[in-house]
Image 1 (cartoon, rainbow, N blue to C red):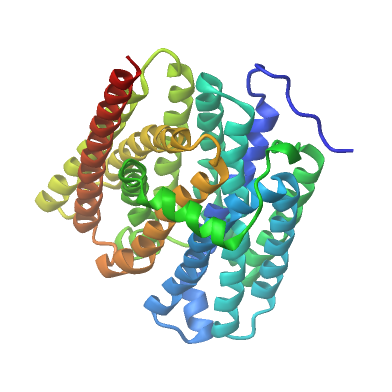
Image 2 (cartoon, rainbow, N blue to C red; image 1 turned 180 degrees about the vertical axis):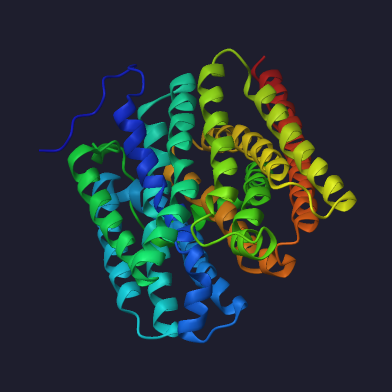
Length: 413
């Protein structure tokens, strides 16, 4: 028997937040759990550091591209069954990674992982707007992000200890178990939130038209790129984690929490604060504060690194905490702003917004991060530029939306 839908008007439950947050954790755990194994993978498969980094890129590019399909597919077929099938496909791809005899096979299996993994987080966002409105939707989104934020902290720690104890292939065994657990979790707890009478027909031509229509909306694109820059300001540090932790800070494979700990603490603290401020502080005020804190912390880190190359690690960690806090204040609100532009196509909208954010993230982690070689002043400058430009795009989007609302109001009279 399928799980029942929550009562109309009810507040989000912790169980629903955990379920949706867990589905959103698939991607960060798939990306950073094997960071501590980079040197050993390079040695075993005779790879350069750039080639090892492409194990991340091979996952993220298909992840971002297939997200364009996952949302519309769920609009046509429903949310629940697609999540279960997606997690089972992810499990099969993870088994392939465990058994991969060569670098080429590993890349192919990582691509298959990425193709399936996007189903969880994309549909999770659509489920939020299926079930809840207004403050309840924003509160659940923040709770989800708080749970999701655990992944970047625990991933490298789990991966580090698995690597030390059993070797790098054991990290992919962990992903196999995670995929199976999430498939079971969704089967037992996730209700069907998109009933048959509300479903659209899945047609490739219509999908292309819907996607193109969303991409042509300048207001949507301004918000989407703003969100992508906010996320990218943190992902440039995450993508540089092996270089920062091992090469710059001279720590071991089990000490990646030095970098991911403050980032995740910033995410979680920000999400906790955001859930308390929903309904009391406007979305605009939250976005202004988030961008100011993120950009300000990046500017301070950049300036201090220029003045002193051996900046104490705790000070760097504190500034990373502030950057993550600010970024987390912006991303969930921008996501809701985008979903509200297309209330009848939330799956497609979630897909397109995720495609832009993650496609940008793939470029940051696959090309920009390796090019910067973990040099902290350069990373901080990249984050500062991303935050400043993201803020400007959001301001422009707000001006355009308010002008259109005023025009529509005038026509109404």
